[in-house]
Image (cartoon, rainbow, N blue to C red; front, side, top):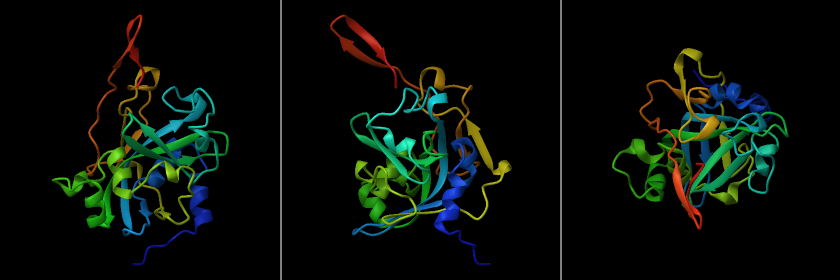
Length: 222
């Protein structure tokens, strides 16, 4: 049976809700990245929700800045940020403009362009590791800050949502990975994944990183 495809406007409307509610629409969706090297597509299997000013784990918790301004825009755009001086992570903006709610793409299964993704990822031992983790996912797709603000329904990105959201019984949830302070832990079980999917990343709690100052060492929030 042929799968029903939604037009971009209808797909965008599915994301114009808080990220915690939009998560079932992204789980199982396919994000394709077009490039001269060749197209790579990933089926999304794990996401994390962030809810803007109401969420102490969100980049938008303390308001709008040059770095996070895309989060405050309309749904269906990519918010890309650089982290730890080495990795890019990508979020799909959700909700209404100004709400700054979005879904971090944590992991997925490469379903097209394995050879291109393998070169970008320096040929990991297992195909499951091509996009298992947010930094690996962006590397496999060739996503960096140049795509911050890009429309996920317009070339060079093509997001294809499923005709129906993932069923509640097919979804697991738990604490977000690496989020420290009030936004981490069981109080915010906003990491969602497709139950039993081998491409899902492993849970790791936040690690406090030391930052040395003249007055001594202090903890730095992750």
